[in-house]
Length: 368
Image (cartoon, rainbow, N blue to C red; front, side, top):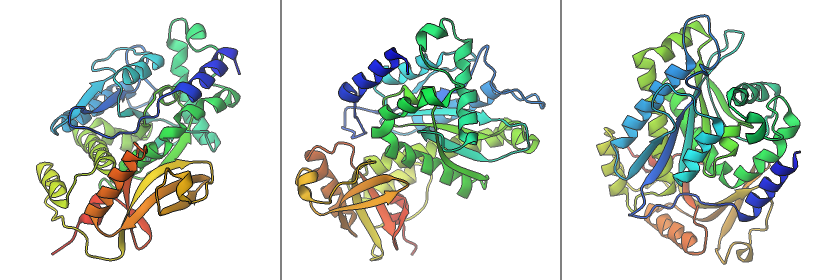
């Protein structure tokens, strides 16, 4: 690996920011929306006349319109028109804004009639398909002026040069996965799109942002049917609504209302008519997730700043650590606040029903 990249990695690992979202009343929740490609970079070619750069931009602008309807949300765009923005500039916009989320929107392409949606978080590509998508998105670097200087030592065609780039996003991986899960669930359950899953690959634009970040492949414009859908007003409206609602759910999970009544009020303002109450079903359990990473730690209070009880799960080599458990929402919110006071500023709530993880708002729903 090039010496400049090595130094940059070491610097960030020791002095970088670890800043999950814990909103105060004065700081808005800032979302940076990134429409992929643009200007002289149209994206992947298609035989059907669709342009990825145009579809991605229209979807992003609609996401922003949806989010701006809600209080205390600040929306920043990397581009609002058909202009070429360098990858490093996109990340710089998000970092300068001290954003809480970075969401990059794209359309997929393939030489077959593949179709479906997938959402990426930063990580080593587990297979050739993941690497192919990352390679194609990263190759925009070659369109930039002085790319050899700005991306010294980085080769989009070489898996070896990508390995170290995943380290800096490790602190944000779990929160990125949380948002990715929300997005894919909405695509699958609401829109009935084919779910190609949550995947890990090395995208430069994700690696260089210092906050939870995802890259959404909204569908294949090389598939005639899916391309028609993405290019239609209905398709762009549906896709943008699914993504904006996923962002709102993510925000709610990280900084939940202090009572179920507040969540009910929030659902009403967004057009949701579901009744919301404190769950009385004992199979619903809330926990406070305080940390995640590849290290396996003993679930003892001395490892977690005195917090007790601690529980742990393992999924694909990622250990997740939880403080407390309760069927009472108000109780678990108090425990989250205690975790914050102990230094776990990125702690957020999770819910389980019959041992299966579910969204917080679903845990609070009850039919009458």
